[in-house]
Image (cartoon, rainbow, N blue to C red; front, side):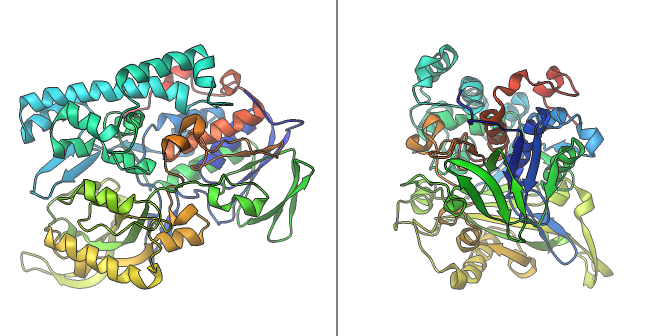
Length: 537
C-alpha cells in the first residue's frame, strides 16, 4: 500500500465531519500531532444539526448502521460509549414502509421476525423467498466488506494481484453481484412491493436499483439485516462523542477555523491557512471537503464525475397529537408512491433530463418516538379529540425528505420553486392520509439542491459522486492526490463512498495512507472481540 512521502508527524485535518474525526483519532492513536480545523462552531459536517427556536434536529444523515465502527474509534482513543456518554439505541423495527395500496410493512433486522412479517402481508412461501434473499445479501456483504470497502487500492489490478481480493472477487462473480441489483432482488423475492424494501437503498449510492450493480446489496444488508440504530440526542451526538474522545486523547480541535488556502513547496503541502489569519504548519494534510470544492485547496478534481441525485429536506415541528393520528407511527416511515421505475428515471436522469418526482416516494423521520426528551411542550390553547381544553400542546421534531435530481440533471430555480414544491409534497401526504400535515407542520428550515451547492457540494447533492461502475471501488476518486506528495482525501467523494459507515471507513483509510497499516496499531481499551460485534441495548 502506498503512503505519503516524507515525514508525517504533524498532521492537519481539514473538516470535523465523521471522516475527518475518524482520520484524526486513528492518527492520534499512532502518536502523531493532529490538529483538526472546522469552519462551523460544532463538529459533524454533513451529520449536522439545525437549531430551531426551541429545539434541535439532525440536518444530515438520520440512519445509523454498523455502530461497531464507532466503538472501534472510541477504543483507539481509549474510550467507550459509556465513558463519553453515548447511548445508541437499536430501532425495532428499523423502518415502517407504506405502499400506495395501504399495505404497511415493518422492516425487522431479526430474520424470524422479518419472515413472520412477510408471511403476514403475503404468505409462507414469500417468507421462504425472503430468507433466500437475505442469504444472498449476506454473502455479498461478507465478500465485499473487508476486501472492497475496508481497504485501500493502489490500482484496479489489486483485485487480481492480491489473493484475498481475488478470492472475494471470484465469490462476487459466482453470486452474480456484477449484474443489476433491482432485477436480482426481484427474482429472489418475486414480489414487486417487497423488492422495493431491499433495493431502494441503491439511491444512497446515487443509482436507480435497476441500474445499480448487485455489489450494492451490501447496503440493504446493513440496512435491513444488521439493523438501524439511533444515538440518543440525535446523530449529532456521535460527532460530539468522537470530537470529545479525540481531544481527550491529546488532539487539537479548532472551531470557526475556515480553511482558505494551503501553501505548497513543490508538491508538498507546508502550511494550512484559515480565514482569521492563522497559519498551521504541517507535514501532511487530510482534506475532507466535498469533492466539488477541491480546487479551492489547490487540488485537482477528477473530470467527468457524475453526481448522485439530490434531495429536498424540510425540518420543523408538528403537534404530536396530529402526527399520532397518521396512518403510520414510526421513527422512520418510507411512504412509497405507485410509480417506481419512473421515479428513478426522473431523479437519476443524465444531464439536463431530470425532473421532479411525478409520484413521490418520501421519508418521514420522527426521532422523538425513540428519544422522548425531544418532545416540546409549548404554551398553546387547544382542544383535544375528547373535547378537553388544554393550555399547552406537545410538539415533536419532524423531517421530510424527498429525493430530487441534482443541478446537473435539472438546473431548476430552487430559490423560487422550493416553497411551492414543499406545499405540493405536503398536499400529497395529506391525500395519502397524513391528515393535518399541510396545516400543522411548521417548517423552520428547508434544504434544496441550491443550498447544498452553496455549501460547495458537487452539483448540489449531499450524496456526492454516484456509484457508477467507473466511480466504484478501485475506480472511485482515489484518496491519494495526484501531484501532491503529502495530501490525502477522506469523505463521501473518495473511497469507499457515501454513507455513515463508509465515511468512517474513509477516515481510517486516509489515516492508513499516512501511518501505514493500522491493524497493527495498539487499541488502548476494549478488546477486539467487543469491537467486532455491536453492543445491543
